[in-house]
Image (spheres, each protein chain N blue to C red):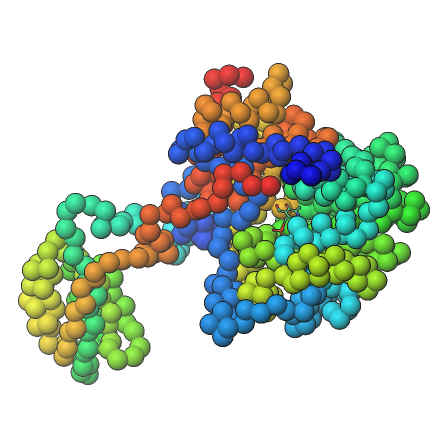
Length: 161
Length: 385
Ligand SMILES: Cc1ncc(COP(=O)(O)O)c(C=O)c1O
């Protein structure tokens, strides 16, 4: 299915020009553009972002993976709690997961202090949240399917038969 | 006697790729489209099997012809994929790369003075291999008008009717040409009629985009006269592991094994374990790599056409073979392009008659680099053509 192919290519690199995507598939440029518009309109493609390797920038950026446990009552659902948390700009990702805890939340800030304060002042006090476990990210090796190594590990000779 | 190179060695000139390599080494911003090997790593499962075999201390020689279970897997694989039915006990030999298989065949079957016809342009090792075996090379040039497929006209024009053997390489390095069943039928007929042995290098068989790979050994009367070469280097991204194989009737394999058992004893054991796993569980990895090559292939062909370098629709391996603009030799163009723009490609002449005026461009390189390389070629053309 060509829409799927376009999607895979966008995920590989959202900045591929429609003309280049057309070259790589059997579609022509206008078909590629139409497929992308459809994917956006249907809400399949929700946005485009840069994949950043923060370690390469001089300014500090702190990220944490936070495990959240909640207890639900008759009035409150997972969706209600999620809606409340997702609103904070510090929360970059939020997922309901199976296993030992309920939500998996990614938080970003400019310092450990800022992130800690956000969790203790904004997240922990939410009445349904019974426990938070914060894991600060030390090094990131892969983000959004892209490896963050230096990329010069191609040790092939420049000419081979 | 001092260490004077033998006549056979002296008869083989140094590789045409060498000089370019030296120029490329002088600078560090080269984008290389000059490579004949995958840019992917060996699938993890195969690497893991190699590691595991080492951990278990499996480091002794194997049977000369290769591990029995590997030969069985190869037999099942070639039957399933290419309709080639060979008995793993007697009709398969595992070698140190397809390179060794090619060399074994020439040494086992070519007598001094035998004439070996080679469809050209093609992989650079056949000609020296025939010379080292004492045979004579008969080039059979193919033409761009035929999409570099081998035709009976070309065979006849070159005088191949009087040759003793014929070397085929499809999907082809360097052109990317493939031969479908229809094309092969007439070549098969020619080989039968003129009693030629056929050496068919099918190492790029998995890398066939659009359509299915066809092997000449599947044609009536061809199996008895054909040796098929294949290996793990290209489709499984295992070049450095050095593992290939040959398929042929029992007596022919016995003859090749006679050379192999003295010269090589057995193919690398670690690599054989990797290969067994590759056949067993790496289909998905192969599919992914083939899809990626296919996307790059379409991209590269379309860009060459757009910037005004005609390029036929290569359908196999990972090369395209565009024409250099009028007024240039392939060699001058490739050298100037390398010096001025830092883009490494191989002039087509290196691969024999029929390759003049073309470049071999490998797309076994990431799309970003291909984009940049094509942009540099475009600006090179704008400035000097
Ligand atoms: C047509 C062809 N045959 C054989 C080989 C050598 O393969 P191997 O690595 O299995 O020796 C190559 C490598 O470039 C090739 O292009």
